[in-house]
Structures are given as structure tokens and as C-alpha cells.
Image (cartoon, rainbow, N blue to C red; front, side, top):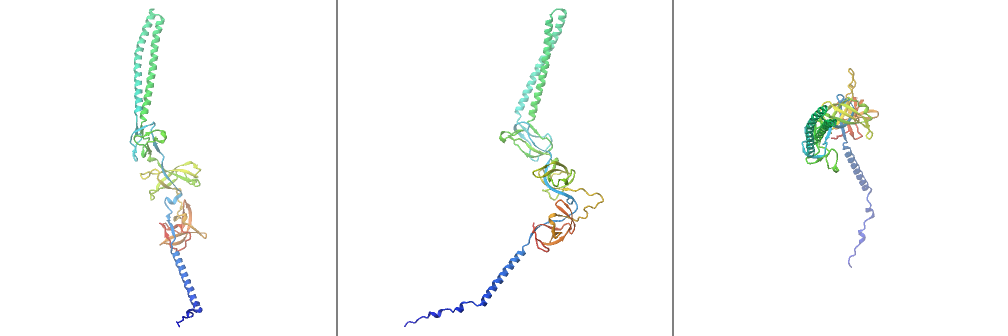
Length: 407
């Protein structure tokens, strides 16, 4: 008989299918160790990230900035700035104005087509000459009429002619006198018309109204210019823009809540945005006596003590309104050691503290504060000029914390 296969011998015992308790425990332990290691690495990576902070330098409590009562920003504006235009409508024949050109008062900037005003001037002169010639003829006739009247008077006395003939001779002489007076007035009227024609011709020449610099060339040769806008906006209304560089000043808008700190003649320290390392002395020229209800500001104009070539119209400028100098013999402000921004001071449990940055680590420092000076505050104790202070960045800081300074 063929061999028979016993399949029952291939069956697995149920006890061998169940894992031992020892194996399960080892698996759970390995999973727990892996989770702890992962959590530790995440915490380590989180702690290794340094917060980024903004820093500012404590300044000495002396000099112009230390006396600032109020800070503001504005622009350089000229008191005398004019867009020079022609008095009459005409085509530009020549233009001499170029950007950056220094001009004197009365200097020719452009000329217009003067053919029509010149023709009117010639016609007025011709009328005056014709009237003057007629006057000469009338004067000759008048002299002869005067002689005839004298002879008629003699003949009338001798009884040769009638009184009517004498009256006719006198009337002729007086009529010629009246015509001469009328003609003289006509000559004067002709001279006046000549003056008007000359003025019209002179209006074709555009001149500089004052000494200054051309900052904008607004018309080109061949364009039509007019003192009023015409032609749907295609007609130029200006030849060039002229600025008196000696009249440059600062114009700032001061919040009306702080305008009481500004007085006429008050000393001001100005810093151009283009030259942040230079301080320009100035003073308040005037406070415009009206407020802008939309912005709640008051306009203040500030005059420079001395102008130079680096100051240009429409430049941005920051100003600090300075306090008055302390009276002689006083030591007001002498105890203040440094000036710091207000944002650098923090309140910690009723104490005023700051965080210094030394070697990329924080150092907590308690400070004693004095008076406020604009956006800064005096530090009477706890700091020295030159210290680097945290003014922005992370909110939660602590002693010894490693930080990264924002560049």
C-alpha cells in the first residue's frame, strides 16, 4: 500500500503561540525609553533657540539730545519758492532755465514769440508820428490865423472892415488853438498806447523774480505757455520753478497735546535723514496760530542758525526741541548719569529694571530713574553711558539668558 501522510504532526501547540510575559515587558520598556529620548531632544532643541532682541545704547546725559523736551519729524521747505510763468499766452522761442542753474533777480529765463506785440508796438509808433505831423501843420495854421486876427483888429479900428469880419478872424484863430490842444492830447494818448505795446512786448521775456536756483524746468522750446490753464490741460502754465536757497527752513507738525512745550525762539537740534551723524543748530521761528483738526497737529516753522550746501528742499529731518539752560549756580540734571529709551525700562514687582547685553547674555540691572526727556528718560543710578540695553524683542527674559542681537 502507498505511504500515508500524517498531517496531524504539523499542528502547532497552543502554548507556543502565546508570547511570554517577559517579552512583553521588554517591548514596553524599549518604547518608553524611545519616547523619553525623543522628548528630551525636542526640549534641548527648543532651549537651544536664542531669542532675538533689539538693543539701544545708553547716552550721556549732557549735550543737545539730553535737553530734548520733544521730538518731531518734518521736511525742509523754502519760504520763497515760485513757479515762474509768463504774463501772456505765447509760444516758447528760447528757454535758458536748466535744473541747478543759479540765477540773479531779473535774469532772463525764457523768451516767447513776440511777433504780434512787436507789430502792435510798430503800429502805435506810426499813429503817434502821424498825429505829431498833424500837430505841426496845425501850429503853422494857428500862427497865421493869429496874424490875420491882429490885422483884422487894426482894420476894424480904422473902420475898413465890419465887426463880423473881425469876429470871423478871431474865431478861426481860436479854433486852431483848440485843434492844437486836441492834437497834443492825441499825441499823449498815442504815447500811452506805445507804452502798453512795449509792456506787452516786454512780457514776452520771462525773468527771475529773485535770486535762487532752478529746481525744475517745466517747459520746452516750441510749447505754448499761458498764465491760465487752457486747451484742455495741454497748455503749460509755468516756465521753471525757482527756490531761494537762503530761505530754507524746517516745517514740522507737532501734536497739539505737546504744543505747550514749544515756544517762539526756542533752541532746536536738527538732524537730516541724509546725514544722521550731523546736528544742525536751529531755533523756532514761528508757531502757526491754527491747528489741523484732521491730524490734531499744529504747524511749527524752524529757522537754521547757518545754512550750507548739503541742506536741500524737501529733505526729511528730525528735530529735538530743547529745554532752556539751567540758571547759573544750579546743578539741575547733574545727577543724571545716562539717557535711555523708555522702552528699555521694565517694571518687575514694583522695581524699575533693565536688561543689559554682555557677551550675548542678559544681565538684569535695577535702575533709579529721573525726569523724562521726550522719548527718553534719565537714569540716576545703575547704568553708565555706552551700556547696551534691550529695547524690544522677546517679552520673557531672565538673568543669564543667551540672546541674539538683531542687526
